[in-house]
Length: 153
Image 1 (tube, rainbow, N blue to C red):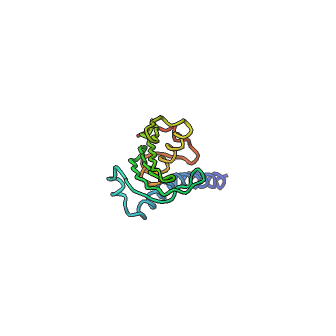
Image 2: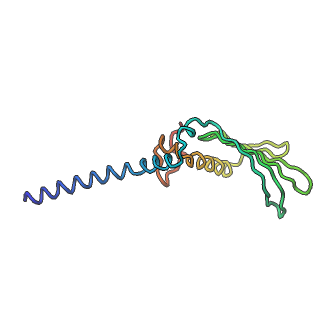
Image 3: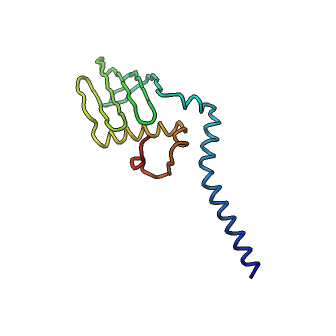
């Protein structure tokens, strides 16, 4: 009987130690990834990221050269301006989100994005934020969890 109680006590300790270690593993993995990047201090100080891009836009059965200006402020603000040449006519398209309102502009027409498109833009911005890794240290994020139910910080 003593052997059975001792075995159960050891099993309970092993299970609780394993559960505790499993809970620490994601945080340790995030810390290791941030350290591998070697830029935790830089990420902590960065408030705004901006970049430019150019390439070829494939739309409406045409190939059009474009230039784009992008701005991202973690965790939920994003804007891009793309200017493309369609058949010799330059067109500029802008889209942005502040985390709650999503809008787009084409030519002189400005409008709020349709819900589905706005949700897609916000999801993309969320992925950009999380990919910086630092937000993973500040928030509890679970795989498969819908982020819209989490408190914004």
